[in-house]
Image (cartoon, rainbow, N blue to C red; front, side, top):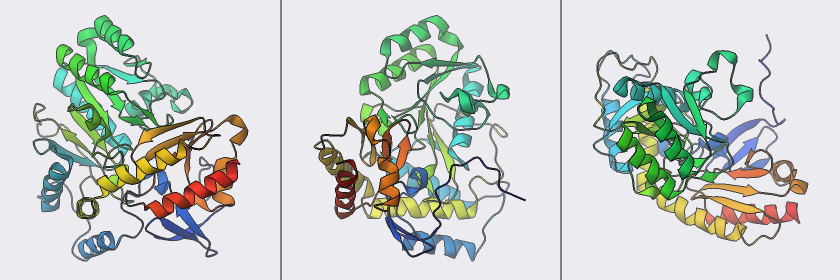
Length: 376
């Protein structure tokens, strides 16, 4: 049997990681500023994280949600404290797409409506409704096509107001990334997020904050949506939540009430996933990683803006997009194969930086030196 060939693969085999560094099977060291799609939040093989998971595995790794799992309750308490959403409720699942699917379902159950507002360049996942709300027709199969999703221009308040005026009580939810990831590190304007909040309140729709990539402290606040000073009704999470262990979740406003059987999952909230997620929050809190993300991210952004050949620098904290001119389209490949630095991309010519939240200024400087070298 062969693997189903859907991934463009770089011919590199990573066999070891520590902090912000990884090594391949030939012993070559790389600086990791991408963290496997923003997943590595507290660094590779963080000792506390490894210890937490190992200790739990030696007790029990899995049992179903048909029994009480105190680790889930501990995770909910810690997440409420670190995020500042202590009166919210937690539902655990396995991935960001699954989190968004459950958020859509929950909103629709609550108000009995079908239509969803999403935005240009949005990416919300590859499962059924999540991919329908993703602005990339290439990955939307015919079975996923629906008339229930309304796409609007990003950061366009007038278009948003008109959609509510036109569809009003048909709108179940508005979903928005506080900072678009796949869409090229595009930050949602504060006034735009405030307008979403006020229109959802006015029309009885729900505000879904997709924080799968821009949450968990990456932006310099726990949720990037917090910069707007408003609370969403549902926050979706994954990626950095488990530092590599698959876990996702939604946190839900107290105004939304559960009933037995409303949502469900087999693997979501299992013992190992909760141990991993607790370790992540404990390290974030202990080492003040949200503050570090803001400080090192601000430093990186300021230094990047001094480089003449860069067209634009976007983002907040350690979620940074570097837009390059077309003639520098090979810069990311050069960073990887010549300078041994992993970064991400957003087509056509945006380098995405999504490193661990404990990235040091020294590693930031190492990247800046390498970038200047490949684009000069």
